[in-house]
Image (cartoon, rainbow, N blue to C red; front, side, top):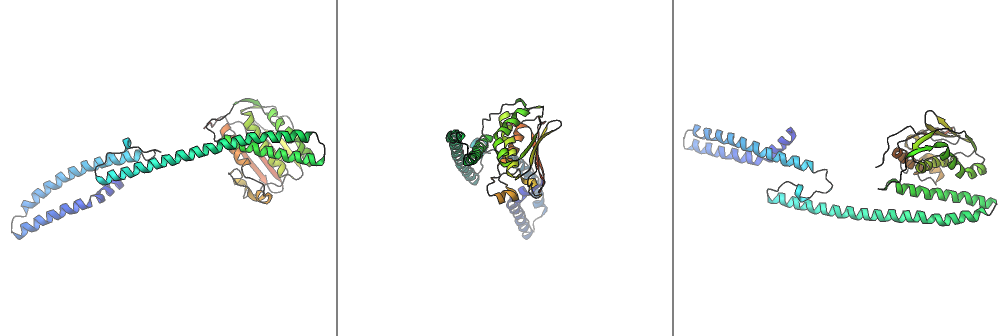
Length: 330
C-alpha cells in the first residue's frame, strides 16, 4: 500500500507544485504591499486542511479503481462491463484500445484452437486409417516363413508401436479422456505386452526372467499396457545381449530391469522430459524422446509413479509404483 501511495503522490506532484506556487504568490504580494502575512497563512492553512481531506477521498477512489483493475488482470477476456468508469479522454482512449486488443486476442485464440482441433482430427483419422494397410501386410507376412519375412514383421511391429504412440499422444491432451479405472490383474497386462515382443526376444536371443506377480492394481488396462510396452521396447532396444527381468517389489511396484548399455549419469534426471533423447539416443539417431515422456504423463494421470535407476554398462531399472490412488483426470 505504501508503494501505491508514493506513486499516487508522484502522480499529483504538479497539483502540489501549483498550490505551493499560488501560496508563494500571495505571500509575495502581501509582503510587497506591507500587508499582514498572517492574513495569508490562516486561509492557506485552511486550504491545506480541506485539500488534505479531498486528497484522501481522491486517493481512496483511486485505490478502489486500482483494486478493481488488479482483480481483472487474470481474466482471459476483459470486457467493457468489468472495467472501471473512465474519467477523462485519455482513460476512454486507453479503454478503447484495450477492448480492441482483447477482441483481436480472442479472434486469434479462437482461430488457433480451430486449427489445432482440425490438426488433431486429421492425425487421429490418419493414425486409424494407417492401421488397415499395416494389418493387411501382417496377414501377408504370416504366410511366409523366411528371414526376410521375419525381419519385415519386426519392422512392421515397430511401425505399429509408432502409430500407437501417435494415438496416445493425441489422446493424452484430449478434452474427453477414455480412462476406465478398475481393478485389473497385473499379470494379464504384462503377459499381453510380452506376447507382442516375443518375436524380438527370440530373434535376438534376449533372455527373459519373469515369474507371476500375483497382484492386481486399480488402473486403466489400456494406458498401463502402453506404458509397460514402451518400457519393454526401450529395454530391448538398448540391450544388445543379456536378460530382461520383470519382478515385483512389495507392496505394488512393478520393476522392469535390463542388463543393457545403461544411461549416463548426466542424462538420468532428464529422461522423462519431452523430446530429450540423451547420449545414447543421439547416437541411435532414431530416438524421438517421446516414449518415456508419455509414460510419465500417463502414470501421473493414472495416479502412479514411474522412476528410473541406471548405470552405464550395467543396465537400467524402471519402477512403476502402482500404490498411488490420486487420479489426474484433467
